Image (cartoon, rainbow, N blue to C red; front, side, top):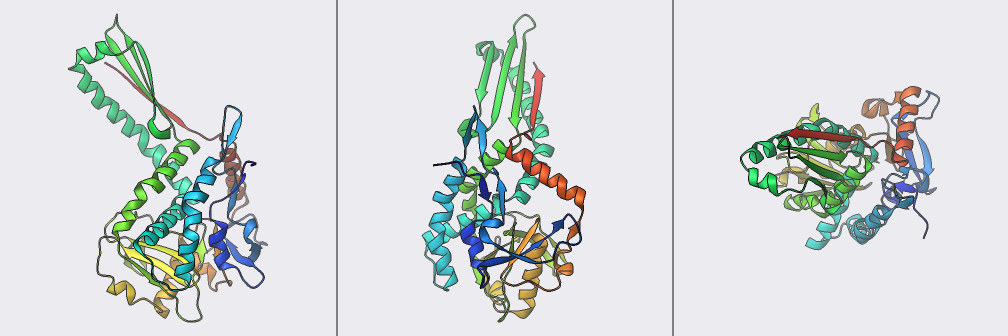
Length: 347
């Protein structure tokens, strides 16, 4: 079996639910290189929402696309029958809900927009956190000379369960000094570790929420995007934050399952009566259509072109940014944009 290079960060089986009569998906780009690019254009499913070697890594001269196959086997394949049940308004059992919510978690975690957001957070926060942790270790070991003496002169501890981290210790006995260094690859390998952990453990927090499936107003449809899961702090229709989280109380988690079914929950709220009142609502159909478009990263997908796109997501015409993002994708594919951070202290 050859290596999978065209990694669809929005699954083809998901996008097929938005195909038109010509078996294509209407696509709106939020970033274009020039103003002559049409606002909407329809494409075959295989031609959209993929990036070269998004999940493929190269190690020791070999290509490894095992994550792509893991996602297909453990997340996408089990979800197909469940998605079909939702499409036919059939009730789901507990196991099917878990499959659906794990699938939704994957759609939140596996996209380029999410990768960019996570890398920004990690590169901002992890070095400081590592420094603080090592400082605490130093303070602890200052009062435990017997532990320091028991350590080998040079030690390298690898990260557990695929975590791309090394902890190196070295002892300078004449100076009675111990140095500890942490090295973390904060690029593709850390992202792949976080993605798999999120879909193995963290997603289970979604099982505690109370979910409702909403239908659009008759004659309308739900669009979707290359960031199809929305985590929103809602204050009013004109005041909301789209950078919330799975476990933050009162956050709304929103996911268009297909053009006629929208999955939604309010974190920490058992009574779903308010959400149920939005079913088939003209007002909330427009609101959620706008939110789905606003949350998009670089693409919006729909069965039919949506009106008023300058209001919903005004596109950016910027050839320099367009080329920059293209180059960033090429570096990611080549696994060239990892970022290592080292922190050391002496006891």
